[in-house]
Length: 173
Length: 332
Image 1 (cartoon, chains in turn brown, orange):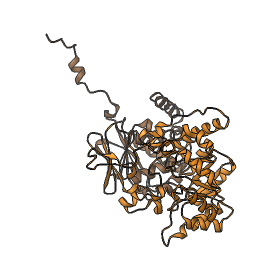
Image 2 (cartoon, each protein chain N blue to C red; image 1 turned 60 degrees about the vertical axis):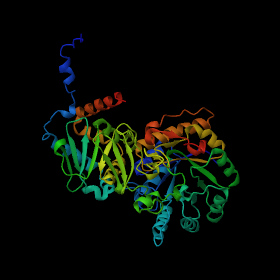
Image 3 (cartoon, helix red, strand yellow; image 1 turned 180 degrees about the vertical axis):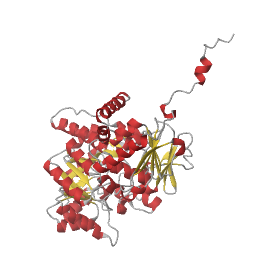
Image 4 (cartoon, chains in turn green, blue; image 1 turned 30 degrees about the vertical axis):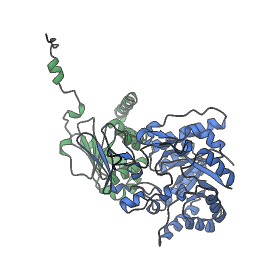
């Protein structure tokens, strides 16, 4: 006799695990916030653009693998672009970077090494490698914490959110 | 003569300050052009940045070594001459050179500055090293990574200058100055243009199964499975197929990093004066962790203590480490 399957097991087996990356979110409210963020970083760290050189005009897509959106960056100081885009409707771009948000934030703040997470395959890059290397090197020359600069823009709630994100990152190690 | 001077990499001004703060005795760096062997996009120093960096290092008691360690092609020597003069104006403490012409220029025009012989010069015998000391007044030689510790000890007894050895970082072809693999594949020279595997000719292609192929120019140099650690896109770390190895094999070296932390006491006892950490192309996070780890280890040894060795495996290429030829010529 075939053992009876537990009730609802078929339903459970077929259920797709919940992933935040699959949840559709409205992008429009994010756009002014992202633009404010990139404007502030550009104002605080203008030296970044010198290191970027010709890649100021390169279109980068940063795929946040654990969120339902990607970011489109064109780091041209005269016409900055930094906006959220849908993963199934990516704009034309030359360089593609993919990784989870916490990891990318920690790399931005020089807490983890970009090459190390590339070796471990947690960071994926494709397209124009020179553009990605240039962006990485330019951002790595920014001292202090870009994440804290951004959190400060939103006052106490921003700082609290960053503390929680960092605690999450530490617990995930 | 001190032993165990910690010579640390800096690809940006922020990395230099990080290295100084983490305990570097000296920092090596270069200008944003072909005069140094890490001429990568977005990396290195403008003259203004180097001036400020030297000031910062000197205030904290650290030295700055200017890498002029490439070979000037015919008709382009002026760029190296200009870099050497700028370095003197900016008060760098030493030059790291490979080319005899550059060495002669510095010796003739900036005789008060120390000359260090780059690993790119590939001087690995007492006779070759004595030649550089006699002709150009070289004060220190950076040895290629092909010598065992007993061999280093013997060389030390026969030369009138300091020895610097690599202790951590990239472990590719160990006689770099003679490597022409990038030239073969791309037409650009590591030794004259300063770029091994130029980034604009590197491409990573992902497949539907999560694997990744690394290409340099027209050549696929490796393929990694979905869960396999990756390495640098250099030919010396590539995997190649032939009739003997149809499944592919590492013909030169595998993705792996040098880590001599366990050999530091032996190296100091052999007379090594300075320890070099490779990685001007690496991030501030790398510089901070690696420099701090070796600072603590060297200080422990100087104090007669067993060195506490940090785990640096996460920062290594392919997440693998080796003691290379320093331990045995048969390391592979």
